[in-house]
Image 1 (cartoon, helix red, strand yellow):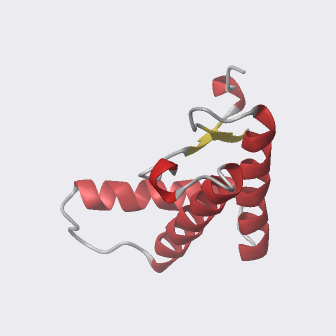
Image 2 (cartoon, helix red, strand yellow; image 1 turned 120 degrees about the horizontal axis):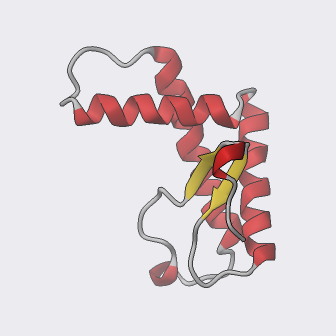
Length: 104
């Protein structure tokens, strides 16, 4: 299990720097990447359902940590890039299980 960062045009060292930044956010928040990813999944499902019902406070906090980690990963990976070259949307950070091991 681990994290994968998908940003075109970066080196493996850039990717590792980005993943390390995301991991630091999870550690500082006292939450696992899996839990943060699960919270983000719940937030996306809630959105897809038209925001019906309530998103639990735990899932909301976990999703916030995921978004913070994703932003930190992008910033660390793309340090020095001009603003217009930065990835325009989040969703560059992914969580994978051992069965989904990334292709390098």
